[in-house]
Amino acid sequence: MAEQDAAAPPPVPAPTVLSLRGATATLGSRPVLRGIDLTLRRGEVVALLGANGSGKSTAVRSVIGQVPLTSGEVTLFGTPLRRFRDWARVGYVPQRTTAASGVPATVREVVASGRLARTGLLRWPSKADRAAVQHAIELVGLTDRAKDAVGALSGGQHQRVLIARALAAEPELLIMDEPMAGVDLASQEILAATLRDQVAAGTTVLLVLHELGPLEPLIDRAVVLRDGCVMHDGPPPKALGQHALPGHDHVHPHSSAGEPHRTGLLT
Image (cartoon, rainbow, N blue to C red; front, side):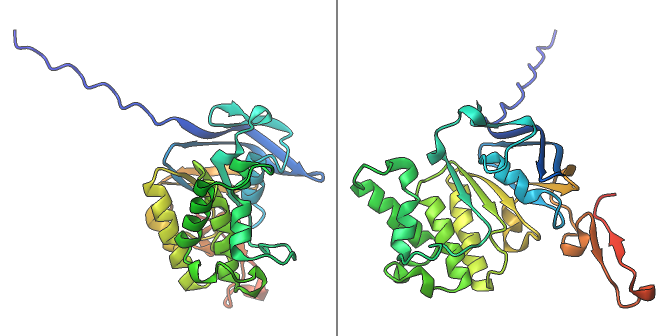
């Protein structure tokens, strides 16, 4: 009897880094998340897409504990959020704000504040800490501005400082809320190159985006939200743009009486 080849074992999935299960949340009395499920495995780059008000930013803020869930659960690296303490493993870049929040500070000082997740407030920065801060500044192309006041930077440079601050802690999970919003093309390209380096090093990335733009080649999966629900979880949709996102209303010049025309990627 001919010897039969044994079936190859199925590939072992990468460990889960982030998980939301049945996540619901309200802002005021308005439901914003309606039972969403989301999983990221080590090394994945996932884009969270949707029209304004679809729940994208609320979802990522619930992951880091800024928005409490009314039901459901968040786990980070296998630990429920309520017990998670190892925040040096998570880097978070909020929607663009003034990086120094009105406090006079240099680029290096703001980026160095991101290292506190590893060092704590009481330990003097080590040679390794200083090297990590310098490397983060180099990654975002701001070496020549390291001693400059953050208040003197452009909007795109502000965003690069915020990203460097998150990278200074050398996180395993990087969460970015609309990192390309209002950023000039040159800064977009620098940010895309920075993320390519992080992904190559094995960082898991969750991005809130309106459009993929220069980041499209990096995206493994797209999760599309509409009215706080997951409408799609899989390959990035082909026809993508603000008008292609679910629930987007816009007015065409040829529409009758200026009535909004609703278009959706997934219906």
